[in-house]
Amino acid sequence: MKEVLLEAQGLTKHFDVSEGFLKRKKAMLRAVDGVDLTIYTGETLGIVGESGCGKSTLGQLLMRLLEPTRGTLSFTGSDFLALKGEALRQKRADIQIIFQDPFSSLNPRMTVMEIIAEPLKTHRIAKGRERVERVYTLLDAVGLDRSYARRYPHEFSGGQRQRIGIARAIALKPKLIICDEPVSALDVSIQAQILNLMARLQKEFQLTFLFIAHGLPAVKHISDRIAVMYLGKVVELAPKQALFAQPLHPYTEGLIRAVPIPDPAVRDDRERVMLEGELPSPVHPPSGCRFHPRCPYAQASCVTEEPMLTEKESGHFVACHFPLEKTRKDLM
Image 1 (cartoon, rainbow, N blue to C red):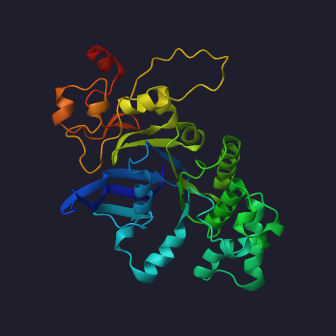
Image 2: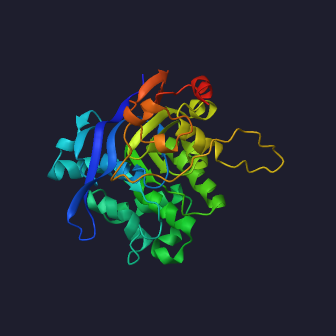
Image 3: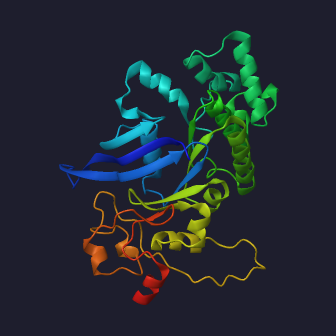
């Protein structure tokens, strides 16, 4: 039986924005619009989608860097949204984050020792020599030399800076780490090293990851389950193997088939599903299914009726009126 670590129901975040030439008209930007999500202890749940779909906003909501407009959020069996003050500060030690940009996320005026020791200091864990030794142990864990502790962030490469960020994230031995596109700013060869490091640390420190990315290869490499987001909503959620073997949502299908095959010797005979157009504005999302303006299988019902996220197969959820491949082929 899987242990539920975090559960969100109807999680929503709307922002007030101004429209018009004089900016007098108020509108609502629907960044995250009713997301149901469960994260199990010890797994890596991938979140994938185009830029602007709400992935990073969702991650910030889950660790309460942003307060939701509505919805519920449970963490380790308790109401996470009900916590305030000191109780919230203590609970936040169990949720840490790895940022996308390994340079801007590190204070340039602090040494590596000070950066990694900061969460230990904030939560009053270890002092003096004991704290220093814990930092050295964390440097060992992420594959950095202990002598680096005296240096500053600008003296390192992007991959090394991300290792420093990872060391800081695991310093408190959290239960959940939000990984907000942690490899997208790195070279491809370095991406693989960081992903392998994260996989090793997950086993060593018994971590749970929420891995946010817009590229499918990285998500496929590290995730156990994958949630596909589109315009503030989860449109498909499934185990990794099932998602790539038989995607049920046209958007997921298009994302997968758009990934190039890197080996030129391998013939690419895959049927292409073209995703035409751009992501609509979250201020004025389309009616019905939000993907219908770009969907090659859209029917009249897709324009007027919003599909609900429904379990079509064991553990495989999809929000689509025509989710089965055979059904979609009959429509063409």
